[in-house]
Length: 455
Image (cartoon, rainbow, N blue to C red; front, side):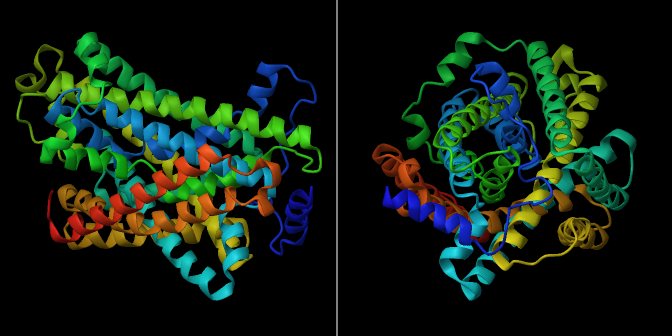
């Protein structure tokens, strides 16, 4: 077909080479069609992507949503996760079929000047995401070991060297390490929810959408926050790149179809795990704090509440608080690894800047550390002031989201670029509806954040 020929020509003419060259095309995959062997071989990228859907920046929203409105907003988490599955599968398809990540594809279709502007916007979004992870890790270190915030922030920079070590050992080591940290997060919150003994019937009813979410203005505002925080721009660039770690002959249609199939399986399985963890967070907030009128706006509030019998009753224990802090630390470490990789991807893809991989990662990390360090110094280590910085990082994320999802929808629907792997009509229509809704939602969140307005 002519359109397939055109797609292959674009791949061959791409001027910037492979995405993440040090890991690209390094992971062997089976030649047979045994389902579970193939699923295991293609599993891994989904875990790195799923991290962005359960990072420290999402925790407060989910737990506070449960504390204020019980289980009602579980249906919103379900809807958000379905949107995430759609967009991430599109990213994986783009990377597998074209051999380009989203940043490379965008630069190829926009040119040097616009590409530079888009890089700045995306870099700010990654910095904003990384700030949340730095704060989460630093607060966790303070809660666990009473380490001053400034020292904790600087300690979090060491995960760059951990990432460098894991990269030298092979990309599969990064995937396994991240998967282990995800398991720790899941185990902690599953255990705490079991202790809370929530009502199963109430949980199941929470997954049924209700008009109350729309008619109750304050509930709608929290629901919009959950949906708006679902899709992180850096995840779209990350996924379209790391799926290319698997060895693939793009001239073999059967191999391409197989890669798309199992990569989608991997993504959906891992996003289901993220969905369960986010549900556990909301269930924990509902079962322990609903009706207590507790102030749960900060990580330290949650840490203290879990060991306060006046709030959570007889299950209150310092152990619960320590487990919460461990999960927070694991989440922060996970997210900083993926954020650093994303910084490398967009720098290479948008502006074709080729510098040593260790230097790229150090630069990305330092950019995120600077505003947090300044905030800690100015406010004297006040964790409430530092966590307030999380609120303003959402502005950059909201600005960058349309820059990411609009090109993604355009490119994956383009038959000249994607050939027979272009989005079918139903996915194209659904993707555009999701794109418009998320764009409008995020512009509203920008307005509300800057003005303090509510619905």
